Image 1 (spheres, rainbow, N blue to C red):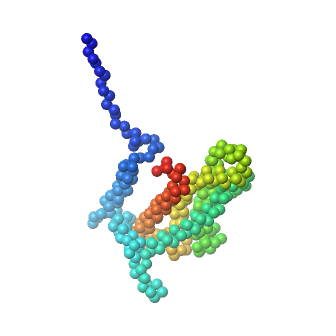
Image 2: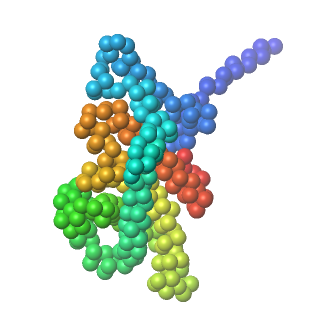
Image 3: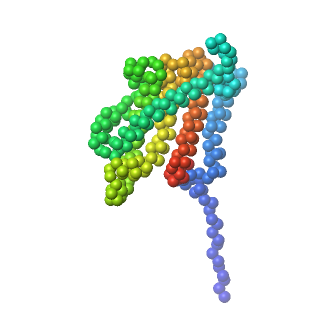
Length: 294
């Protein structure tokens, strides 16, 4: 009688695929922890370099985290007493600066979008318009926008118009090609189907091209938001008495490094907040597109 030899049971290997999958979102349990690792390491290193009676890095070069937190609480939340026009008031310097900078960005971004969106749609849909405008716009994308500061001062003076014009230019030259590319990326099959069903050229533009390209265009607003916050600091270095850029420059001139760090952190927090707001509206407007994004 032959012995019943059974094959050994295979022990399944523990798969790491859920974490290390290519281009796949992380499990929810990992997202928070991995997102906290690097910020915590930076904070620990910051504390280690600045702590003690003889810190590795002096406060003239790197302030203590507690000093930066004190400035944030004082100038963003609590406020400091001041006298304006003979009246005692509480001034929240960083809060007022953040509001001023945000307002400049909102205005300039709105103006840039009002011009770049219709022009980009026409350039992406109609090649004659693209050939007419592209020779002028293409070189601007490779020029440093900061080089236009002297020209904006010459043309618009040194007041608020100059800052809005500079920010408008900084956003416009990057937003326009994104709109053109989004319109051109719409599958040709959609255009031909609409034409077959009898749609005219403008009907195709506004009922096929624009709706299909809208998610990509809206996604680009996140990048434009970051660009705006980069350029607003440069804009506020020129003859201004308000804004985050002005406060950072003023603090730097007086060697108040803790206030410089506080201003930089405020920009980061506002940038993250506005980015989250744009993503939130993107999910509301284009749920089919945002469902697959993290």
